[in-house]
Image 1 (cartoon, rainbow, N blue to C red):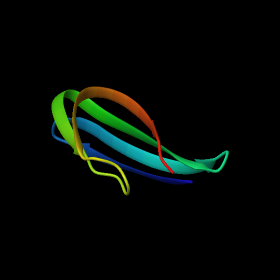
Image 2 (image 1 turned 30 degrees about the vertical axis):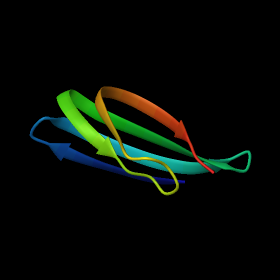
Image 3 (image 1 turned 90 degrees about the horizontal axis):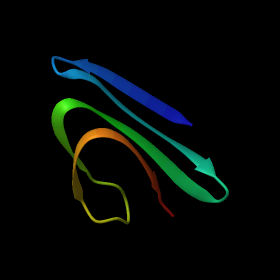
Length: 58
């Protein structure tokens, strides 16, 4: 598992990943009133709003 966080002026940004059942599971937290671009290996880039996201990869 890997985890990183950053206390920005807009709030805490967090991301992590772990290998689970042969897949990589990414967890991403975007602070209030913000948007983020998620760009992960083997997946299309996507724009997201405030919230918590769990994305399963290969």
